Image 1 (cartoon, helix red, strand yellow):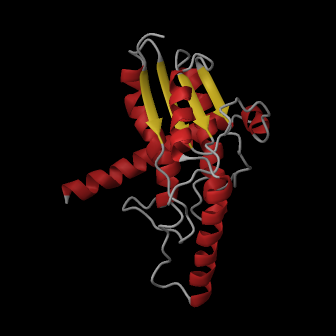
Image 2 (cartoon, rainbow, N blue to C red):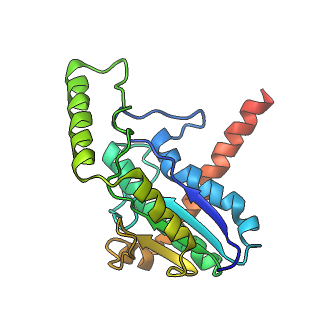
Length: 225
């Protein structure tokens, strides 16, 4: 198989407790699921290009792409938990296809792990400003998800093994791939077919670069103060 250079990304945060912004004005869940991951890949590109077998894996929601709010892809005006999930999923696939086009020797994998038995939902707490209804609703959601995870969730060890397989197998060579919970390629294009035809790979990348430039400018101002 030879030596590989890999970038493995799995930071995420359920967005059930409302929108919380970073100091750069970016919504935290959006950052963890999309911007931070793509920025890491972008920064590592020079090193990845030196590897004989460069591979990038983002464990998120591959194959579950949905339509974007095309006039507000950063969700400045139309934020919601569902919108964040849909946008970060579709934008990840579009970004990886753009990067694969520009870096033909690299493998970009966007995988969906399925339901995994973790405590990520159990750790959710409502904001202090939440009312009784939302607190009760969140407690119900936590309990329901805990039961589902116990009954049908994948063990953490198996999930880890599947991601390690994706990073090391020769099944998925250079290009952009969407992978389902069974470690198989997702073939149906869904909304991506239209977005490819309309140039959204490039439009999404341009948006992402603008967000990076703005965030870096704000960060520089904070440091100078």
